[in-house]
Image (cartoon, rainbow, N blue to C red; front, top):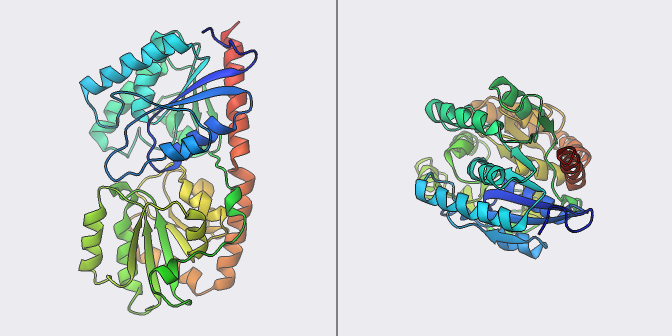
Length: 389
C-alpha cells in the first residue's frame, strides 16, 4: 500500500508505549477518533500492574488499536528489539504518511523504526518533563543524550504546553522544529453538573467536605502531601474527607500511611473509576500535589466540571492554573501551604464557585479536543506536503 493511497486522506500511525489511564492515552484517543481526513491506527504495548487500561474504551470510541509485541515501559534489550522489528515490519507493510509517537519508549523505538522504513514524516509529542527532573539526574542525562540523537531523525516535535517547549529548548532538543499545541480532550460530558453518589457511597452526610485527587498512585504524584494536609485539617474540620481516585504501585503504601496518620474514617480509595464526570461533580476541591507534571488532564477535566483546583507550581501546571482565578498554586512538598489553600477555598464557597466558573471557561476555550485535533492534523498535512517536494 502506497503513501496517501486513499485520495487526500492521511495515513497516520500513532505509537504509544501503553494505554494506561492518563492524559497521554486520552489525548491519543482524541486524535485517533476526531481527525476528519485521516486514517489512523494506535499501536501500543502492555500496561503495568494496577495501571488500568484504556484500550477497550478506545475501541468503543471507534479507534483501531493494535498491540505491539515487546513494547513496554521497562527497559529490556530483548523486548525493545522485538518491538523495533515488529514496528519496522508494520511500517514497511502499511506505508503510513506519518508516524506520531507519544511517551519515551514508544518515541525511541517508533521513530527509529519509522526512519528505517523511510516513513516521510516522524513526529514526537512531549507530554511532560522526562528530560529533566523526572527520572533523577543520572537517568535524565541518559535520556537527554538519546533524545538529542533521536532529534536527528525526527521531522518535528510537539510540546503540549509553552513550559514544555521552553524546557526542550533549554536542553537542546527540537530547536527550530517544535510546535506548541495545547493539550485538548473531549470535555462535552463535563458541561452539565451531575452530582454523583460519593457521599452516599461512603456513608457520609450531605454536608461533608470532599477534597479529591485523581491519578496514578506513583511517587511523582506525591499523594502523601495531601494525606499530611488532611491529618492537619481533620481535627478542626471533622466533616473533611479525602477521596483518592486511581491505582498504582503505591496502593498498599498509601493505605498504610493513611492508617498511620489515623485517617481511616476520612480517606477513601476508589481505585480506577469510569464515572469521572460524576466524581468531579461531587468534589469540592480537586488537588494535584505532584513533584513534576506536564499538563495533567485531571486539572483540565476538573475545570471543565466547574471545580476549583489546587496545584503545585511545577512544570505545566502554572499554564493551566491561573493563581487566584481558577485555583491556587502552591510550592511542592509543602503540606502547610496546601492546608492554607484548602481552607481558603472551603471557607469561601463564593470564591470556590467563581474559581470553578473561570476554570470551566478556560478548559473549554483552551483545551477542547477540537482545537488540539485540528491544529495537529494541519501540522501533519503541512509536514507531509513539505516532505513531498
